[in-house]
Image 1 (tube, rainbow, N blue to C red):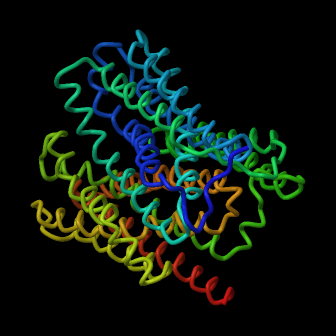
Image 2 (tube, one colour):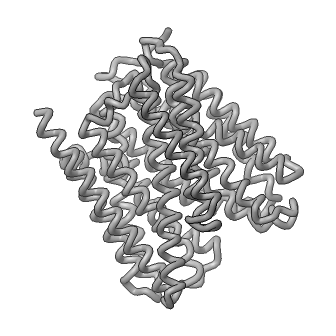
Image 3 (spheres, rainbow, N blue to C red):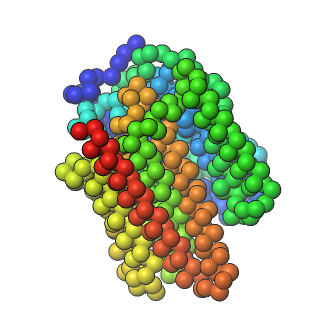
Amino acid sequence: MSTPAPAREGHPQRWLILGVICLAQLTVVLDNTVLNVAIPSLTRELHAKTSDIQWMINAYSLVQSGLLLSAGSAADRYGRKKMLSAGLALFGVGSLVAGLAGSTGQLIAARAGMGIGGALLMTTTLAVAMQIFSPEEQPKAIGIWSAVNALGFAGGPLIGGFVLDHFWWGAIFLINLPVAVLALVAVVVLVPESKNPRGDRPDLPGAVLSTIGMASLVFAIISGPGHGWTSGRVLGTGAVAVLVLGAFAWWESRVDVPMLDMHFFRDRRFTGAVAGAVLIVFGMGGALFLLTQHLQFVLGYEPLEAGLRTAPLALTVVVLNFSGLSAKWSTRLGTPVSIALGMVCMAGGLVSIAEVDKGGYAGTLLGLLLIGAGCAVANPAMAHAIMSAIPPEKAGVGAGINGTLAEFGNGLGVAVLGAVLSSSVASGESLSAGLGTGQLVGAVAVLLGGFVAAGLLRRAERVSV
């Protein structure tokens, strides 16, 4: 079995390898948002109903979120390079089937297959980055990895809009093929194999329980706004999620070789990073969901122009992370202060969007720049805190936890802040006022998450001294 290069020096081709895994990561992130712009075309050409459209979008996120922990565990056991290669292959095949689909059923099945590949990619890319870089360089590497996520968020609607202006809807999936093939070849040639040297036996019951539990939880969250939070569909799947995840925690605390060691939650660094990450992604995911509506329904921009108007957020993240400035600030300030400062900037940005120059773009632009700066500093620090609290041999599971938190927090944020918007409008507020209320609730969640995480991480540092 080949092993990664010594942690202190890092792999000699680490920056080239980082470029390869970021390319793989970008395809997954783009696909989270690119389908939204194709909804009118799919409705027209495949005669898709509203329920079909929802399943086209949700099949990908449900499968991906449900499998993240299991995918990370498989990468640790069988090899991160093998699982990264398998993820790219599955994602490429799924993209081909999706691009050539002749019915809504075929497209939904293809999207589910892409979700399996996406789960493998989301966990292995971050795990490989942790393995090939020295501890001193890890913050910068994770910063670049995070910047790619921001780039994908902003680029999905733009790329999708451009492709649909020139080609048919299937092209938004087929453009993944050359990227997946290129990345797969580069992974085979460049990326070193690494895995848990203990060779723990697979925790199959844990994998099944975590997959069913997380998929049920995410399904309940995304069903709430459309079907009502007290509907049988939401309450039933929510109850299944609670019972199954409870059984998962019980099983993991008793099995000899758990997929997720519950002792991790006794580490204040881990619990602090987890608590903060959920609240941060909750606030940001929901607030950015409201932002797209603010740009179109309040400021009156067309979808493509609205996408362009959000670009300053991603560009700020990219510049600060790729230049290494955010990593330098985090190293100088320390993880707790970096997270708190980043969250203050992000919360301030949300307040600016809600309250400054409500009828124009100036307040929104200021808010986007502040949010971008806050994301550039806080998100890599949070991811690094989670990964650093996990033993290196469990890097895949750590990446799975990080991805699961992002999926859960984002879905919950969209659902809850969407409900805040709906209740505000129903109570007599204008749409603009309702969107502003939702942004302010998101700002409070972000600020609370930052201070909770910073406080717990500071306490952990004091205990470890």
